[in-house]
Length: 67
Length: 242
Image 1: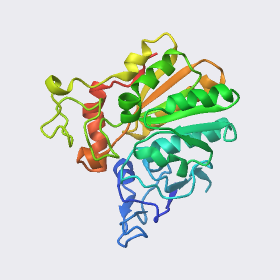
Image 2: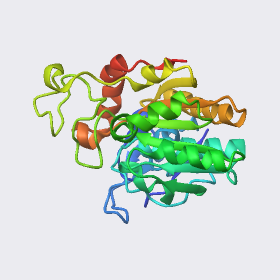
Image 3: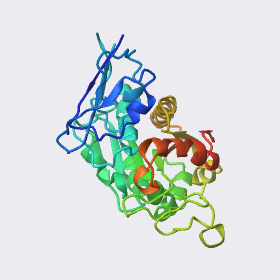
C-alpha cells in the first residue's frame, strides 16, 4: 500500500500523473487552486501501490509518495 | 509509511513559469536529484541558457550564471578553467546549443573541455513563439513552417549529438527522453554519469534529452509524450552515441 500527497497550489493540471498511474488512482479536483487551475488529487479508496510513476513524470515536482 | 519520493533539496520550493506538461520541470528536478546524490551542491555551477529555461536559476538552489544567447559553453569554459575544483554544467535548448550557439558548442567539444552539458531538444523554439528550430522534424508544423518543414527550403533536422560524437575531444554523448517514467530514470542515470565523468576529469560529456513542448506542438501533454515516442525518437534514436 502507498499514498501520495499533492501540493495542489503548484499543480498545473497537466494530468501526466494520471496518465501513467497503473491503478488509476489520481483524479482531477473539483475546486480551483491559487493559479485558478483544477489540480489533481488522490482518488479516495484507490489502491495506490506507491510506485512513484506519477511523481517521476510530474513536471512541477508537486507529488510526494509514501509507502 | 515512509517517504519514498519527494522534492530534492536543491530544487527550490516554488512553482515554475513553465507551461503545463513542459519537460523542463522534469529535467530541472533530475539535475537537482543528481546534485544531491553526488553531494556537490557547494561545488556545482550551472550556466543557464537563453530560451524558456532562461530563469532556471530561480529554481535551482545552487550557484548559477547566465550567458548570452548560445554562449553558455564559452562562459562554462572560463568558469571551469578558473575554478577547476568546481563541477560546471550548461543547460541549453536546441535554439541555444544547436542554432545560435553551434560555434561555441562545437569548439568547446572539440577542445575537450571538462564540462557536462544537458541539451534539451524539443524540436521547436518555445520562448519566442513556436518557430522552426534546427531540430524540427520534416513535415512538422511550426509558426515559420505552417505547412510543415520542407527539406528543399529548410534543410534537414540537425543531429548535433551525432556530429559531436564524431569529434576526438568528446568523451561521452548520450541521448535520453522524458516521455515515460522508465525513460526519465534512464535520463537521470545519463545526467549523473555526465557529472561523474567531469568529476573524474574524463572530459566533455553531453546528454541530449528529448523533451515535450505541448503548447507549441499544439497537443495535450499526454499527446506530446506519445509524439516523442512515435515520431521524435525515430529521427533522434535513444542510447549512447559515444
